[in-house]
Length: 208
Image (cartoon, rainbow, N blue to C red; front, side, top):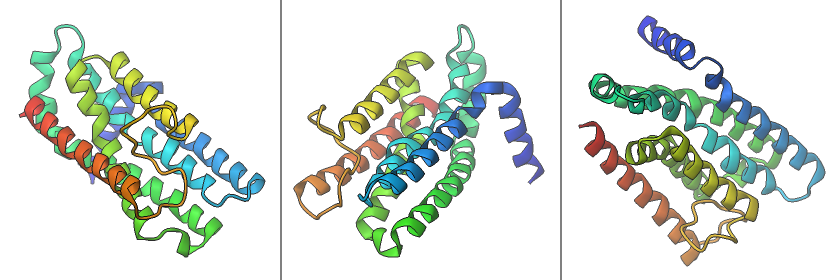
């Protein structure tokens, strides 16, 4: 427990104000969820804010932390340390953000009832969470630039959420209406699963 506390404390001191960015995103998501619940009759709208804002910001901490590897002249020194801690870092931040998103899920259950979170939505939410925990670090390992990886990360996410998946042809990983088992839902699950698998392969190659 002391080791875990030490690592989180070290991360906070290292990132300083940047460390709060995901939590600011959570606050924004919460406000939008509450506003959507109060002003809209669509029970699916709060879930859009959960998957479109809260889940993506949950993957930012590791991107910020691992960006130091790609500072000029730092890669050879820092890469051995980070690659030995990658799995540990993924686990501890997945637990942290998983707990926060569980609270969000409980709020949505309170709003819409237990029946809202059927197997399809729960599976989608879990796959989306896993995808966003690793895609940011994966992009960082590919482009080796914090600014560019965040730009790709944010541009795709915001474009999909704002346009509700109507601007980009494919791939779509979000659900903007009640999921019905059809080819489009299957493709969404397929792209999420494929994205997770390819991200893992890239991380293994970069941090082996």
